[in-house]
Image 1 (tube, rainbow, N blue to C red):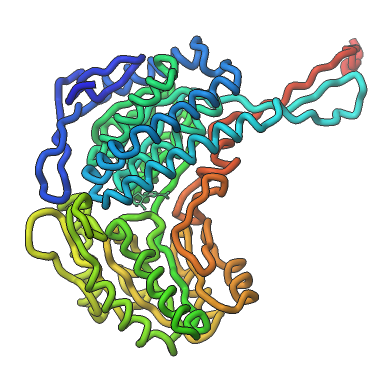
Image 2: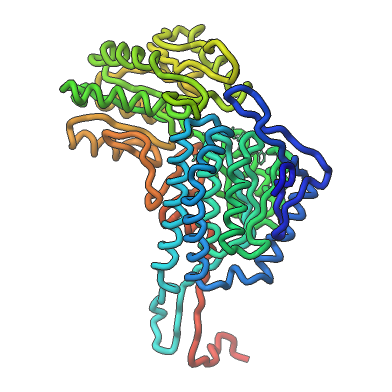
Length: 494
Ligand code: NAD
């Protein structure tokens, strides 16, 4: 693949049919990192045709699972081989630290291996008792068909892989559309899939804007399923666009995630230090541009002053810089627009009475950097508490009782993830049981396991990625009822 030939259909790299291209910027200094093809509807149509043909008449859907799993495992091996190159590419494109880029590659390797193991370990179907020795009745799973996979800019490689690995394991073909802001590691992944031996036409890629590329994929009559990860506004558009053709739809949307800290978790110095450290990590990892960022600190009132003072002190010391520079702890925001959006949330919070305890400004110099920001004395009336900022902004709310803590944590239209910090194991289980969020971390924040489902309640989405449910999303279920001794039923007399 050469620069601008970033559209991949039927096993061939090419430029956009229109000849249009787009510059991809390095968010650390706004320099041009690469130039990619700016696809349009003609490119989507070509990619869908290729995926359709590969599904309807190609070998992949009927390839034995052992061979499909072998391609996934080879892909994992190739990702491991290229860990440094791809980790660096992700770091530069998305503005992560190099170590974050490497960890993303490791997580993706795990996901490919997990789905390979999962399909290998399954039976070929579930025999059900039809109540007669003359009937053989079995429930089997089949691939859905052509899948449109649309991904966001914050974890480009990871989000693409959480879709691609199960889609392939289940025997589907696909067209992936990465974010126009960070397409580079998805291009690299498609190259590796080809190197791993995936037949032409099974994997297709169209780089380009949400509208028209993503929009066309969501409404395309020859696409059977659309799996989307991104913001609520685009997600609802995708759902509407998919309605006319009654596609299967999976949505992984945003979050406004509570991190609930009870005073008993901080009764010892070690407990206090751990909870502060993890609250920082929850809120400011990848400049808070994480769907599951713990952006709402909900803390017991008696602990609040001491905890927030220490949190703010440490937030001020976070070292910002280009992700590849030694000692840098946090990279830039992904774009000028994302930083401006963050600034507008901070300004509105301050106008509504929030108290600034750290950050709240851009540092000097080039790039889209923004200082980790702590806003104290926040409440649900504030936009910054209700809406997803997707930037390095932590709001602080306080509670007095367990019931109040749960009510605050659930008082959101989202429901992606939440953390609970307590030394009381009974309370931990009680609160975890009452939280309306897809993932609850107790005395931790941010771990993801490929074998555990990921997804949200409420407006955080529809469906699940990872785990057995993450594979089930890419399957149709079929009941095959075989009568071994057919006889007339005589329902009609004549
Ligand atoms: P976004 O919604 O702007 O874009 C996501 C993708 O959708 C991009 O590829 C974009 O080009 C495409 N798109 C935009 N408009 C479209 C349309 N009308 N039809 C089809 N596709 C369209 O989101 P973003 O700004 O790239 O990413 C940030 C958002 O993603 C945040 O809200 C974050 O919470 C969410 N996210 C969620 C998860 C999760 O697992 N739940 C993970 C990562 C990010």
